[in-house]
Image (tube, rainbow, N blue to C red; front, side, top):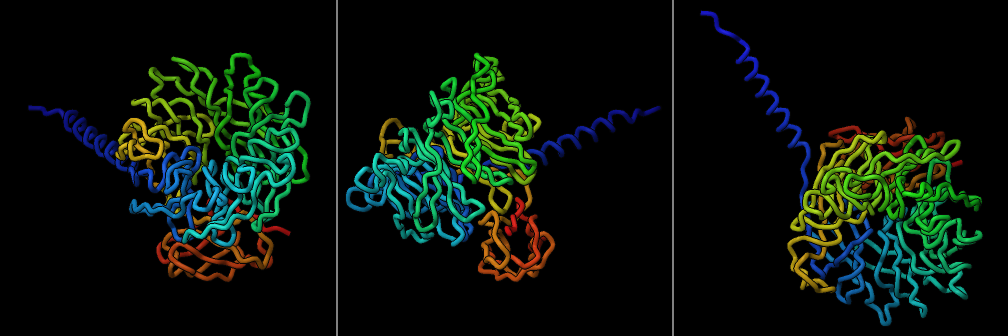
Length: 495
């Protein structure tokens, strides 16, 4: 009797397929790490986390805390969450209130940030320094100049630039009262660089939405409201003070390219810029926002690479407000504040060419309505926040209301490799810099683009190194007992 081998082969193929699917599923792990409960803060809104020199993550909330005016909190990788600082701790909120921007890790290992309220007599916001242990020093009160020409109500992330200063935007103030671009030192000396609505009919934009990014050519890019259509602009600002509007959203008439670019931008190594628009686009149900790419060379052409709400019931998500990050695998990662299987928002991944994957749909128990950008930890995983949701009864939150949670912190693991990250984007030879990582104890070698450097292992998560003479711009490489780690971006050796 002849026995066919086809069923055996089919069985083997099915087993292999099941194994492959199991491996693929196990490579992606979503974990709800910690819950905000009002006392330690609530509503992180568009305030992403930042990794500290101790390997923990630090974030700000718009409300909650001891006085209901916002907090700084710390989250360890094991989910332990603790209050670092409650704003409005001083009389008349002299220390600031309601931070509407995330922290930035400074070259000295301390955090710097802004609040949208509190401060001086005008209550127009502050610029502060905060130690990891929770000691806060107010360095500047906005609206300190007549008619608030230095700006008021700072918003969005500041960027630690190549020159060692912080650059940011305010939503109001300036010459026209509709926002500014500013530079501020680590000691609080502020210089207003540009006032929005300086051009006729505010064609240069007004009330900037988010913070700036700095490209490899030193120029800054950002978004603002207003423009020729009133739906937002994308602009460039050079270190020499030249402002240029690169794109007015909704010029198509039907906003098929997107409108209201609320999320922060991201720049690739090639110099191209990517971002999200919270509205517009072309969708099956209705337009739920876009992901766009802007080529900075030549004619500054903008291309839509994804339209949200393209699936029935907007299962891919809608209204992306948190912007994008560029991960070590070369892909773009972000979130939508609504949509998904449960209507509470999604996490997504996509290539710069537009190949899209939905990674997670929030369901309230694990968080709801994420509005902030993700951050990639030096261990390769992603961390993020949701503005609402979680198991905490909403009645315990400062704002009260229905039982819908004060927000969550989550982790998404996709199997990406660990890396190292320099706190400063660049420095001159001889400058001591901080490098973040994991498992750094026992490291034996450190090189700047191939040039050996002197270094000191401060802890398992921090190395200090001196930029060596003769080093050139490129990646930093550290040899640890378990692996050779490379920096996620190029370090700029300045003249």
